[in-house]
Image (cartoon, rainbow, N blue to C red; front, side):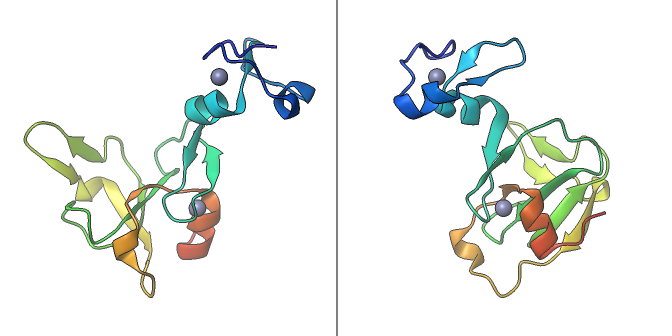
Length: 127
Ligand SMILES: [Zn+2]
Ligand SMILES: [Zn+2]
């Protein structure tokens, strides 16, 4: 049994219960993570990328990020909420809302990025 994406042979564990995409194509664990999931920068768990709408996109800012906002957990209330081009990389502060703090944690070892809902519950208040 082969993965449709990378064409690698599925291992025993994977072929027992192979994952498929929405077209029913077989997909290995690695490609599945790659395609459909993201790694939460706070807890390191995989979570589904899904298709977050305005008000559902939660992310963390750590003090290492030069985003010109305070460290914390934020939700994007209006898209776009981030400028990333040749000249600047920053959060559009009018389009985001701070929902939680990351205080008491070692922010230096973390990087910012989209976070899972478990961490939203842990560090922020879900809207
Ligand atoms: Zn694959
Ligand atoms: Zn998390």
